[in-house]
Image (cartoon, rainbow, N blue to C red):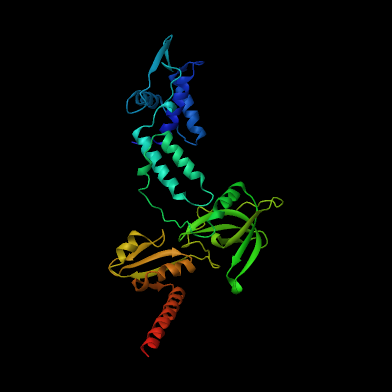
Length: 342
């Protein structure tokens, strides 16, 4: 069974104390050391004497680390020290549970294999497999959706580094407006998000002061701007996307109740994979559901992707917009069929 973070911190702290031959660690000292270590990792509440005795028992067991511990008397008190001062649980081979956890981490790392600027991943994976005697052939059991041929991926590492280091950038960007043209602008990079198998950069446009959304496949060049002071984000990106589908915050970010009806056949699929975290059932018999979002382009595209299996009931403005798109599509197919028949 995997060890939780709280317990792991206690075991590593006890290991450090047991290896220290310069000081005598009595049970009260071990409790204090563990509580101090937990507090440094923002764990509150602390541990009691019973917990430390249980930890020692576990560390001595075969299920734990099989440590050999001397319990030495100093008057009426007992202090604890490794029988072999050179011993450490950090030198122990991986347990089966730890090996499984590391294997899962390697599987996650393989997602970046083959992507530009992530060649180091191959070296890290190979080193982990060799160092911990893990079977590399068993890694490829999970496939993440990724398109290594997508343009702009070569900028991903640079943009992550810039956002982390708070580095202002000059971006050369291709826009599709006005027939398509390249433009340069200064941006304070804040956040990167993947949606629909594409990557987007969110940052503050230095000229307008507005948050912009920039697709990485349209970035043609990046230049660091060391002479411009970085302006930190005043947005909590952990919740920035809570009220939208996709990545585009509309000009009117007002949250609306979007009600839609689906077919009996499609209903269980939409319930099991909601269009938005706010989705809830309104009427099971009528297969009516609703979500609380600010309507945007990505929501319209998501709804249209279900074809005739979804009908928007409210709000009226969104229903009219969907009707217009369906009507335009119908005309294209109907006119094409009519012309072929003639």
